[in-house]
Length: 41
Image (cartoon, rainbow, N blue to C red; front, side, top):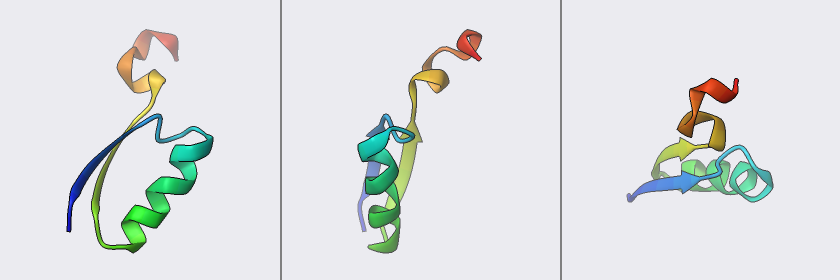
């Protein structure tokens, strides 16, 4: 198992990558641009 940080986890590629990593048993930390600047919400 690896710990993986995925920047842009809610984007096109991240949205497909994160489930694959989770299914493979990895620990995933996701980050999106909105997480980086909460004032954008």
